Amino acid sequence: MKHIRNFCIIAHIDHGKSTLADRLLEYTDTIKVTEGQMLDDMDLEKERGITIKSHAIQMEYIYNKEKYILNLIDTPGHVDFSYEVSRSIAACEGALLVVDATQGVQAQTISNLYMAIDHNLEIIPVINKIDMPSAMPDEVEDEIIELIGCRREDILRASGKTGEGVKEVLDAVVERIPHPVGDNDAPLQALIFDSVFNSFRGIIAYFKIENGSVRKGDKVKFFNTGMEYDADEVGVLKMDMLPRQQLNTGEVGYIISGIKNAKEVQVGDTITHVARPCAEAISGFQEVKSMVFAGVYPIDPTDYENLRASLEKLQLNDASLTFSPESSVALGFGFRCGFLGLLHMEIVQERLDREFNMDVITTVPNVSYLVFDKHGDSKEVHNPSGLPDLMSIDHIEEPYIHATIITDTAYIGPIMTLCLDKRGELLKQEYISGNRVEIHFSLPLGEIVIDFYDKLKSISKGYASFDYHIDGFRPSKLAKLDILLNGESVDALSALTHVDNAVTLGRRMCEKLKELIPRQQFDIAIQAAIGAKIVARETIKCVRKDVTAKCYGGDVSRKRKLLEKQKKGKKRMKQIGNVEVPQKAFLAVLKLD
Image (tube, rainbow, N blue to C red; front, top):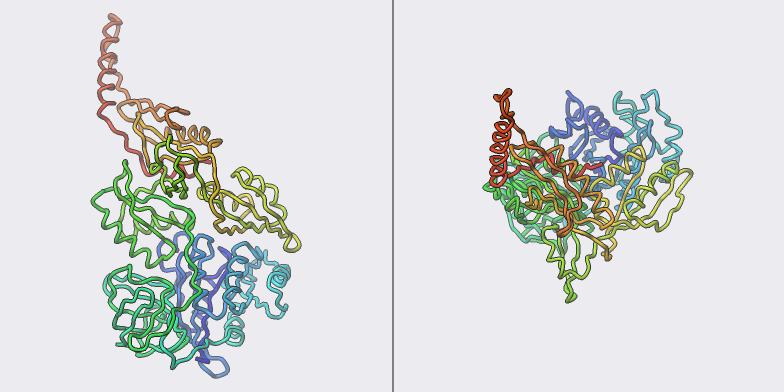
């Protein structure tokens, strides 16, 4: 155990974590790096250049003629995947805090750092990209010292591109990060921090052993679910899985026990022996807090069960996804899914399409509301179509959040304006250091789910960090906005919004839908309504054939007769025709600005 080091790499998005991880793997001869980002193995990760999943891999390193085993976990940098980071941190004793020499300390650096400090991890600060012409290592060093209060000589300088400083980073990992502590003879206690579905082997769980040891063939049980299994195979994670006879305290590895049902494995659960179980589960695993809820429906209604199975398999690999069944008048049966943000929602949609061949429609994202009727009873409503009759509603309460924004002083003005436009209320503002300020706002959750984070990033040039926690429900004047196509309500497009924004939102939705819905053989009326009152209307003109082309000269009544005949046909068509709303229209409504 003295020769084991478990550590993760944390940083803001695009600060070069995955490239540095590649250099560490190359230096320890773990793999030959043939193309960049060897750990980012998902097509989506390669295309977008982001890390979506945290990846665990084991390296061997010789230091002072002794062999050390280093377990590295590379983590995502985007705030939508911060849950992945929290799980990786739970399986480590130390963290490399990577900061870009050209950009300095940024938002996600701070929130990931706080997460690591909460778990008492040893922090090794590394300044990356020092080979860049625009690097400012001295200024960035000052920022890091101010942030974590370390000594100047503790900060390492490296370059993931050229490999400079990689040996110093590995030496620091061995010297500074403490080895895991635990009792190898105690009952087995292992924390599951991730899992994947394999169509041949069933579900593979990744774990870190806190106490005890596990051998191949042992009878194990999962503490929270109480299910018992045989450990068919245990082993360690290199680029591929390497089977071992036994894993001891402090090691990170995987277990295959032929589990077929996705519900039986929960990330954060504890593995123990059936014969000698541990007294309690490993605690300190945080719950997911979904920010954005949206309905996900199969395009073909017969795919409902396949969609359920796909979501369960996806949830194994992405524990921050939550879902429950729901139904809609327009779209049939589907699921109400909870996501951590809009990028997360987009990634889940892409993965459903690529990995499971599921064609789905996603509705407009929203949050849950509390509706109180005249008798004082309350009901939670996730979907505007689930709202009871307006006459029976006494008042509606919406969820509020306490938001903390850390930003550069140069961006205070635009950020304040953004928050106040979103019906926010300034609670306090305090200067952390030099030119850094922390602003606390109380905001309605419904206002921030769609585009708040994207706007915050663009007005602060990617610098502002945003963190929040739910702060209870408050009464609010909300209106249900319905979108009607030819008098038929499309419940997937309906939204609950504040009375002051309802009319402008309705107008903008109608204009946007007019651009996106293809023209038909008949006129399509797009209307936005609040209750029985129509607040906006747009008309998509029908595609018409020139029926009077064959009449040249002659009596005008012949032309009129032909036009009247065409008009009757269009009217009849309108009665039986229905309008298909393309998926693009659902997505465009999110990005109305």
